[in-house]
Amino acid sequence: MSESYLSDDKDVSASERHRVAQRITWVSVVVNLVLTALQVVVGTLAQSQALIADGIHTLSDLVADFVVLLAARHSRKEPDADHQYGHHRFETAASMVLGLLLLSVGVGMLWGAVGKLSAPDDIAAVKPIALYVALFTLLAKELLFRYMLKAAERVRSNMLVANAWHARSDAASSLVVAMGILGNLLGYPMLDPVAALIVGFMVGKMGWEFAWNALSDLMDRSAT
Image 1 (cartoon, rainbow, N blue to C red):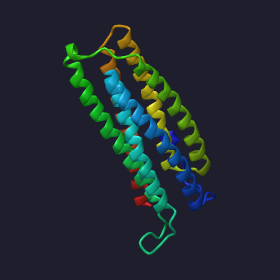
Image 2 (cartoon, rainbow, N blue to C red; image 1 turned 45 degrees about the vertical axis):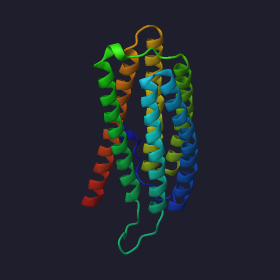
Image 3 (cartoon, rainbow, N blue to C red; image 1 turned 135 degrees about the vertical axis):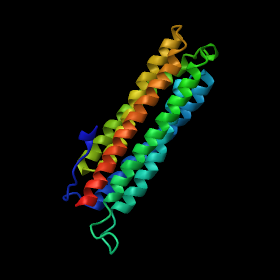
Image 4 (cartoon, rainbow, N blue to C red; image 1 turned 30 degrees about the vertical axis):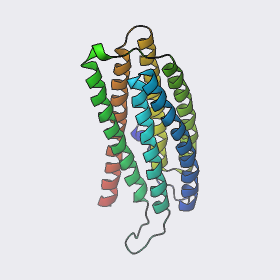
């Protein structure tokens, strides 16, 4: 994942990065609002812990989107007395926030899934509509990822790349969730919380990688 981090390109202006960040982030906000409501509501009605966990993961994207908007606003400011080299560290700091957010969400998912697996007799049969929503979410998140990553690479922004991969993590987790729900429907009820457990691990791992890369970047800049 560290290969997704891009070096700064001085040919890309701060105003251009800000414009691109605002556009793709607001698109992400709309998509994630719809998906969060759909996943949580349907997950609750269909009794799918995996779909609910994926919905919470999508909700974390909304928080991440607003972090990106705030960071983009600050990073476009010109150098001043307190920031002689500009405000570009806001992007790296935002990447760290995204990483810590993912890490905390992953830990929460792991905790909930372990709780379900410790009481297998209480695991309910999932309704088929949960599978349809998981597949729809998978498609929506993959399309969102491709759109965001293309724009992020064009303006060479680490922060936007991190947020794009955040969307991809949702696409990957939705695939796992769909498989878990399908297993539940085929008569293996434990596969739903197992899917939630796997999603938690995937999210936590990606969060750790983003936070560590951002911290390393901040430390490198401080040493120069």
